[in-house]
Image (cartoon, rainbow, N blue to C red):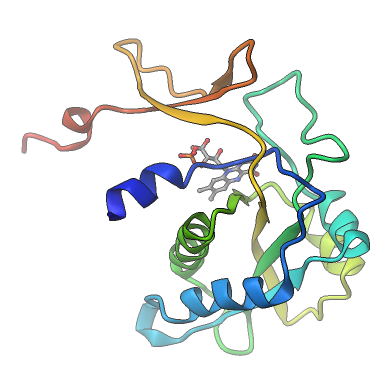
Length: 190
Ligand SMILES: Cc1cc2nc3c(=O)[nH]c(=O)nc-3n(C[C@H](O)[C@H](O)[C@H](O)COP(=O)(O)O)c2cc1C
């Protein structure tokens, strides 16, 4: 069921780094993005793949993790992502990607969840530095980085309380909690 898959598809930030994600798997995930909606069907998105330890290390160096977990600097060696998909805008097709990259990212992460993988959209990216590290030509603008791997953390959804707190948090057992606002708060009576 789609609801189950969407519920399972939580942002994951700790992985079994030793479990490789093959390039072919990344290609299959990008193919889901390829089939997804695109404003005016312009399809300006391109993708750079990374699934080799050395290339992964370059990506990891330039991304930021879990701003609300102030005491956590991000995944330690051994629990880092095994792969990344870097979502790019090909500015020779269009300067603007509209919301295509969000749609593409969700397609990719749902596909990953279906395969027993997990991931995280990363918008905190030192774009100039990452472009240089991966020798990405200037025509391609980095929009998002998708971190992927075999999950090594438990993430639970909960309903945000009356105080409206939406910051995710981690309990003493290392379980990551994600508060979502209640449905009745989202649908306006207008
Ligand atoms: C556009 C976008 C950018 C994000 N950037 C980051 C990021 O830089 N670092 C990070 O750890 N998580 C990032 N996230 C993940 C969010 O923190 C996560 O979606 C949120 O906490 C809700 O958790 P959930 O995805 O399990 O529902 C991003 C999510 C989105 C949609």
